[in-house]
Structures are given as structure tokens and as C-alpha cells.
Length: 258
Ligand code: ADP
Ligand code: MG
Image (cartoon, rainbow, N blue to C red; front, side, top):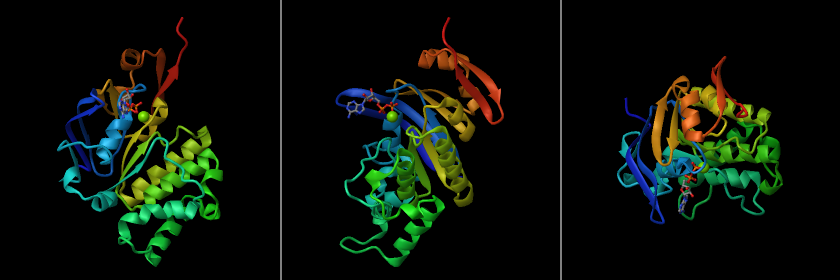
């Protein structure tokens, strides 16, 4: 079967500094893979390259097609990104913001169709956002706003979702709500998810596989139990942790050094 994401020897240099130094990554269609790693490891850069937001040369293919062979509108129908901290356009309503997700379907200089509006309202309903459609985006709470960012990506109708720390701004309850929702959509609509996350226990609970990135290289990859080990976390995060067995995978507990 063709992989949803195929990354081979991806090298990214920004302002003369090597940020990704030969990254390989495969995500099967329907799979959920989460990239973990310390601050500055290159997680956001990797997602940006996979989403076509950074030039990646020939290193990235999506569903068997080289990324650079896709025109922007074609690409937007395949892959949708929720950035780490998306810009919040001043004065824009929730409805108009989510409607931006339909841009790849609206002809240049054209207007949205009834089908575009229906798709947007469907997503707003599913994310429990219908009551917010007229609200100005800037007035929403962090959790509500995060759901709107996700709504825009879903309205795009792409089968590959790239989520860069989708839950960092959320309390523990909204975190679970958003991740459960993403997983439900994945199962019901066959979406593929490539995410980054800081909470390692949560990362392991939701992902089929984890990829540990450190200093621009993949240093471990596999099922959560193989990646979330005290040894790997000690050496790559300089963290003192205990890993205990949980219901849905390993749980990582920070422990104060003696
Ligand atoms: P992560 O998401 O894992 O925290 P990033 O991908 O955001 O890491 O960044 C990886 C490294 O690349 C960091 O050291 C960051 O400072 C650097 N970096 C990111 N963007 C740029 C840029 N435009 N120019 C130079 N360096 C950058
Ligand atoms: Mg980041």
C-alpha cells in the first residue's frame, strides 16, 4: 500500500544552519504518528516541510506523489496543517475563518458555493462550535480557538492532518476532548495524522508510533513502549523520569533528581 507520507533523507538548512540533517519518516495511510523531541529538535520544521510550507526538494512524497509535483491548490486538498501558533486575523468571525479552509475549492475570483457552506457548517456542528459561528475569533478562549483551528483544517477536506502541538494551549479536559475527536475522525473518515506533542504520556496514548527527534535527526522510532524508555528520555531530554505501565501505553512521570 502507498504510504500517506514518505520522507527520505530530508535536509533543511535555515539561515545557513542545518536544522534537519537527513530525516527518514514513513506514515501509513490511516496511521497516527507523533513526533516528540526536546525544544528546538526540528519538530515544527519537519511538519512544515511535509506540509509544503518549506522547500523540501524531492525528499517528501504524499500518497505516492512527490510533494513538489503538487500545485498549491492540489496540495491543500491532500494535506491540512494546524500550525503551532496560528495567526488570528483581527476582526474575523469563526465562520469566515473556517471558510478559509474551503479556499482550494473556490475558483479564483469566485465565491463559496452552497456546498462549501454546508461543509463548514457540518464541521462546526461536529466540533461543537455551531453556537460560536458569528463570534469574533479573537474573543474565544484558548480551547475554543484551538477547536476552530482544527475546524478550518477539517473543512479543507484533506486526508492528511498535520497537527503541531495541537493541545499545548489546552487544559487537561480540553486536551482529551480534542485528541479524542481527532482519533474519532481518523477512524470514521480514514484520516492520517502526523502530530507533534510535548506531553509524552499523552503522545504515547494516542499514537500508533512515536518518532523521537533530537538535533535534527531521528534517534528512535517505533511503538510507544519502544521509544518512551527511561534511557532514551534521559539521554535526549536530559530528564529524570520514571516510565510506568498504563492502560493505553507507557506513562512518563517526571521525578525530581536527588
Ligand atoms: P521544535 O519544533 O522541535 O521546537 P523547530 O523546528 O521550531 O523546533 O526549530 C528547530 C531549530 O531551527 C531551532 O533551533 C530554531 O531556532 C531553528 N529555526 C527555526 N526557524 C528558523 C529560521 N527561520 N531561521 C533560522 N533558524 C530557525
Ligand atoms: Mg515546534
